[in-house]
Length: 182
Image (tube, rainbow, N blue to C red; front, side, top):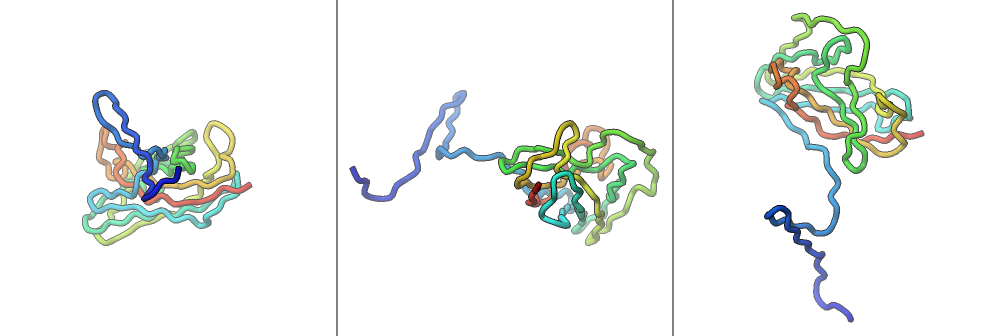
């Protein structure tokens, strides 16, 4: 039998704990959150190369910009001897977090000083270049070759919000696509 007229995707209705949900039958992969700013403070991420060899470092440029307000930033240059104000999150094609970079694992630390804070005026920017190993996982082998995204997540500690707000995600960069090769 031949159908005449437009073909519409099947609509699936699901009843879940008394609520109604609509689905078009296609599974949606989890996505990274899009960019987010905080009181005019935003972040950008740029990769030196869009491809990294497994186990090799990659140069990443982090830029923090204030479009209006002045902000007092803690460790915007990502000095490894201090608490990191953010993390680089690596996601696979399905949007699943497969690696976190800039986490403290071991080694020396030092006490923060006043010079570890930078005043960022409205309309200004500050940046840092860091070398990271996107394919190396902390507790295991390397990530397999494939396509990934990297996103910068900044926490309240960047602004010295204090208490539980220090761990709150406040700024997210746009995810940047890259590839790991053999």
